[in-house]
Length: 110
Image (cartoon, rainbow, N blue to C red; front, side):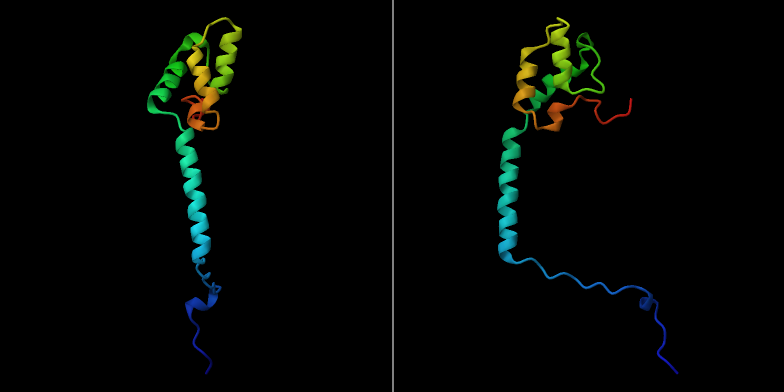
């Protein structure tokens, strides 16, 4: 008689990767720390985010869905609605932070 068939015979054997060397891990850690420090420096403070939230909730500047906060601010300025200058400063200072760039309803399908 031949060898008994096992359920594991139908699955492909996958070999585990060798663990990364200590040098690679240390380089990745340094890169992660640098990125984290930069992200913390670029992040807006909660009171600044609250100011932007209030800008989103102010309907006097027009609708805010489908455009960035900066686009909305510029549109309100062109229409003579006098949006707060502080909002534009925050938007330019933290332009890479998605929490700052997009309005409250950015992630929702409206």
